[in-house]
Length: 174
Length: 214
Image 1: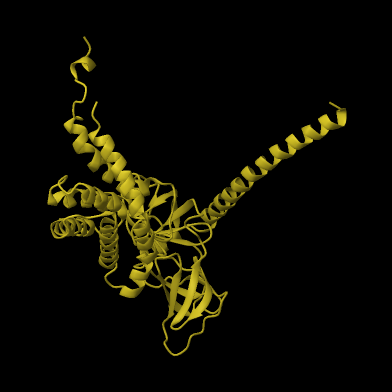
Image 2: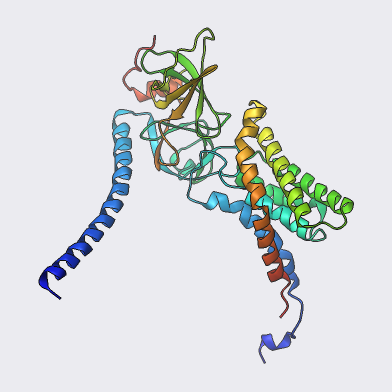
C-alpha cells in the first residue's frame, strides 16, 4: 500500500504548506528584483515584497504575528539596497497599522483594502527613501520615489488577486 | 513552380537570414567596441588592475547600487573607483569574496569632484537618483555652464584619478547645470576597477604626469 492511500479525501492541506506559502511568496518577491540582469538608473520596479506583505495581511489578518515584519523586513533589506533596519522598522509599523485598521473598520471592502495598501506603500517607500538619504533635499528624494508609489498603488488590485490565488493554493483540500 | 519563383523564394529566405545575422552582429559590435576601448585603456592607463561585469542593480529602492562580478579574489576593496570604456561608473562600496557592490555615479549620496574639460573650471557632480547629475560650481557668483560642456574628474580629494570622462551638460539650472553621465550603466557591461588616486598609488604607477590644471 503506497503512501497516497493513507490520506483521506477532503483532508486539509498540510500545515507546512499553509505556513510556508505566504512567507515564501514575500521572500521570493523581495529577492526577485535583484535577480534580474538589469542595471536600473532610477527606482523603476515597484516594491514587490512589500506589496505581497501588505496584501497577505489585508487578506488574512490572523495569519502572522505582529513581529513578522522583523524577519521579512530584514530579508527585504538584504536585497533592496536600503540601510539594514529601515524595512524592519517600517514593515513592522505597517503591520501594526493594518492591525489597527482591522480593529477600526469592521467590514472592510475591496476599496478599503486598496486605500489602506496604497497609503501604507506610500508611507513606507517615502520614509525608506528619506532614511536612506538623510542629507539630501527631502523634496527631491520624495519626487524620486513618487512615480514608483503611483505605480505600486495602481498595482495593488493585481497583487490582491495574486495573493488570493496563492491563498487558494495554500488551503486547497485534497 | 517556375525557376524564377524558386529563385525569389530562395533570395527572400537569404535576406531574412542575413537580417537576423545583422541584428546579432550589431549587438556584438557594440560589445566589441566597449571591450576594445577598455583594452586600450588598460594599455595606456596603468591605474586599472581588474576588469569585471556589472551583473544587476537594486531597482526597488532609492539607492543606486550595482553588483560587480569580481570581489576580493581579484583585489577589489571598498573605495576603489570603477570606470567603463566611456567614462566613470562609480566606486566600490563593499567587496565580498567573489562579487562586490558599486555605488553608481547617479546615486544621490555620490559626490564627484570634477572640472570642465575645456578650461578646467572646478565643480562638483551630485547624483539625482534618476540617472542625471546635478552640477554645482564652486564659485557662487556666476553660472558658466553651457549645454554640451564635457566634464571630467579633477583628481581632487584623492579618490578618483583625474581626466576620466564623467558627464555632458544637458541644460542650465538655477544653481548650476543638469548633466547626463557619459557611461550609461544600463548599457555598459565590462568595467575596470582602478586604484584610488592616493600618493603612494600615483608613485607606484609611474604613469605620465596628469595634465596641467589651471
